[in-house]
Image (cartoon, rainbow, N blue to C red; front, side, top):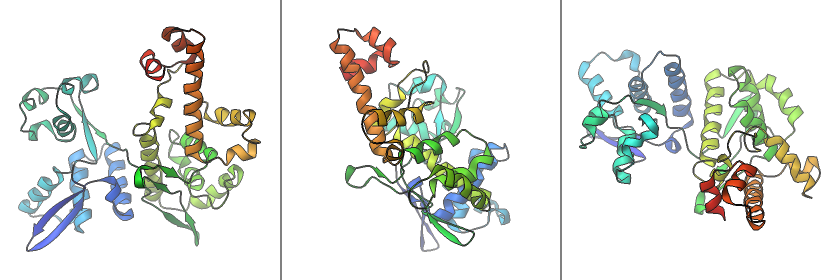
Length: 322
């Protein structure tokens, strides 16, 4: 998948981003606004793509009148592969036998534009477009709130190593707000852009000032963090922490704060100290404790089924660990 679409128009070379990581802050905020309209039922996925192309090219979609120009924009928008993925029934079971490249193509190209033999079957199926929101980048590095500049958290994947500046408590409190309604957006932003050593009480007080930011910017901040959260638990070794079944509730899901303070009992410092542990360190500790618990039970001659009952992990995951 190309990170940019290269075009030539009247001897001028144009480039349109085709990856979340390549978006400028302005493009990201505008795309977030278009996606909000789609969620409200006001735009189709195709219209979102056309509006994004117009934004990238610097033209106003509201002034488009020429049918040929509109057709060209639609054609360009159909080549975008980063905004949405296509989901087929039974978790895309029909694509399971395809080679990786063909499967990727099917997941990011409307079946009516596919040239593969399987396309005819795909066109008859009940498929839907879903937002393909998974990336590790900070697209809004700073915001200005009532005349004061606030730097956001940083993330980096250079040289094959993942780093993130969020503290464990900061991440846990922000993650808990992802499922909240839009009224929580100022608090989420205040947590993620809190200056200096993180303090929960002061972040809540700061939220009133962040409420003055445009709603589109606040929504984009939330979308950026949601993408990072998805990345952490689908593209890294922390995927293990998503394998727990819902009963009982597990630390990385509904009980993350309790798991954080358990680290104090493990001798990693008092409550204040563990709150400031880096989020990547925190997740690595949770992963390590999970693996150690499984191997300890295995050493006590528990079979995989009993370990699954005790830990809430699937049997397949347990077998991989032991």
